Length: 342
Image 1 (cartoon, rainbow, N blue to C red):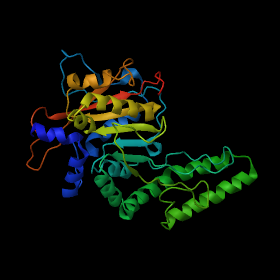
Image 2: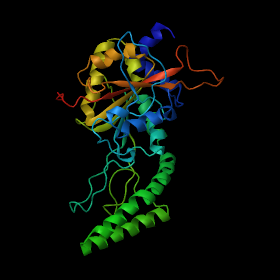
Image 3: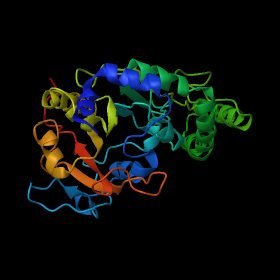
């Protein structure tokens, strides 16, 4: 690839033209199945002694492809994947968000607690948010996430609801001594079961239907945003950020260091205190270490920024993508919660 082409990676006109000429989905580096185990490991509540990811090495350290395993969760407070709020930065035309939804990520952001305070649940917010600075690809992505896609996800969501959610309500009914509330919960269980048995959606999208405890499947959202400028989200909005190829593209653009630092600051700002950013990159730890060390927004102690490697996918002729090492690097950066957002 020529240097001139790499220089275009920070140019929105280049990307708009590329997506207008090629409307098919495209995956940078890895499909979801290639990073699935890493994303699940990020959520695992394991102690620091069980982490098998490697710390970022010094420049002279040797790097190999064997460091894959479970990662500790710093505060043991990440929610299960069904309740996670996920931000995918530089989503492009990737199917990552779709494949994650099919696998149960971001289905129900808020755990229903309708009987705790006696009020209705708040409106459902998106579980998975995709952002990209190309308005062309954002429009294409919105069109692709259509009713056919959500019907597929809804069927899986209904099965999960039957196996996980209804038993929870049943236990709550048994343990509740308030006769009126027991009856209310009983009616809610009947309504949920009725919806599941006749295929009625439990409410695709945002909002609450007749019962304030009927589980609601969240739609993905898509926003045209330049992550190197600002993100239109409040502080501590997300549990997990996925950056797949976006860091590398920024580093191949004019003003790379300034734009990279701004992205790091914004991603840290919108992460919750227990949050992590997962970065999929072609760059080696020696080359990517500076991107995290230049930012005070990520933990530098307690393991700091860690990494693992995953094999590159094979292309049609059975060969690995591109030249060089036969694996990609995945960096896990944890928010520095001691830093005050500005």
